[in-house]
Image (cartoon, rainbow, N blue to C red; front, top):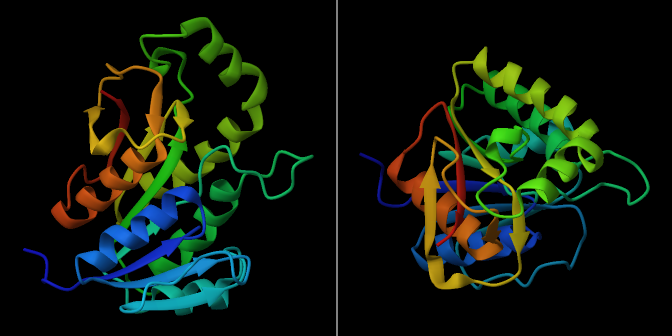
Amino acid sequence: MWQINMNITIFGANSSIGKYLIDLFVNDNHNVTAFIDKPGSIKLPPKNINLIVGHAYDHLLVGDAIKNADVVINAFRPDFKVFKNNDNYANNISNKTIIEEMIKLNKKRFITISRAMDNNAVGKSNHLASISLNKILYKSYKKDFKCTLDILYNSNLDWTVLRVIRTLPSRKKGEYLVSTQNKVSSFVSNYNIACFLYKTSLNKAFIRECVVISNK
């Protein structure tokens, strides 16, 4: 059973997903370390928050951010690039550093987000369009995230990989579907992603599993 007040570290806390996560955890009286890359990019709640500004490939800063964490979440959206004109995706770059520091500090619980790359995981709607996205736009993403999966499978971390197909800005009030068999539609809101990450953190669910979610 988890302790009542948990220490949560959120990387990409200034992303749309990360901002929702901060509100969910702080409103439930958990302690949050928010790791962001741009000063002033989030409005901080009045309590239970520690802010670290830097880059998630900086081992010293990452280690400091997770040293007291019960749960570590990488909340970078899977389609977010470090620079617009290249194929360096933020969550791929940060995953490796975070995982290495967690292993070094004997931390266990890690949750990250991935784009669903298998053609069998493209959802019930817009099948051909989703396959095209996977094959053309996210070819380098697929290669890099495979490295993340290889590290996770060979680690002793209690990890969960949340796979999403396409994100939407709408909230949908926390109503979403979860599957380990890819039986979902193609779209999920950022708010629903945050709700899933929040509930999975508290319930310690889907350990060492890759799951896919979508809006209901």
